[in-house]
Length: 307
Image (cartoon, rainbow, N blue to C red; front, side, top):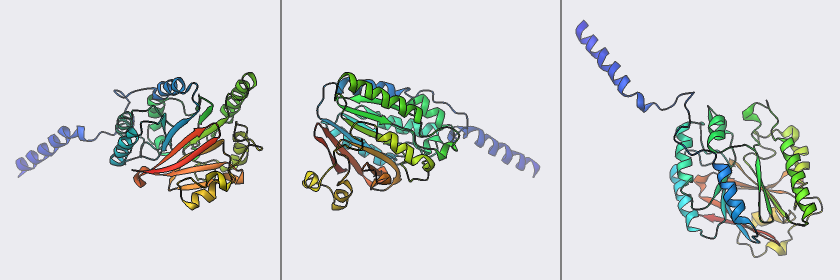
């Protein structure tokens, strides 16, 4: 009997040893064999391709965590949109911040034929995700100029960082706004439009709503988002192929600037704090929606693509 028990014990022990490769998670796993600093590389391509462009087209997706099949289909669809200039991802590439999740999702997104950028989502901070994201993608806050468009990409996940550091980063915003103003002072109207991308928006539980008002004060210093900036009328968007609910949300909001965000997992167009600045909240990728924006000297248009 003892001999049998010993054999069973040894058999189970050997099974555990040989099965160790099945357990891929480790709290200190690293990001070896994954592309690094993708943000810097893609920013360089987008800025170079965008020089002199009057019409700029980009697509927006978000919250692809665990939805690998839907993300694959989204990538296939986006690759068929040959007129796109770039693709934006609103964060939550992962569910638990694991290396394998970053590896799988990054591999899938790297199939895009267009340059693409992302911001960090609250789920991407979990585990060692904070380190993984910085290594694979780069800084949490950055900006770039694409023709006459200024694109600002922000970390707004205050709660996930336990309010231990300033989020949103007002110092970054101050410096960025100053740089844009200096460009326009030297070359008037070089930058006329602004788009901000973030994961969580004011009013969300992840956003530090104690600073929502000063945050919007900063946002409204960007070109196209100032207090006196032009807004859409009903006539401007009458021909847009969008829902009546979306049209109602857009009327009276700025025509040269807006914000895109994820996190809520449902279609949600809102004016934050009634500041005429529209936040375009996109569903998670499982809803099969892609927001499609065309920026022109006269403003922009917005569509919802289904795949």
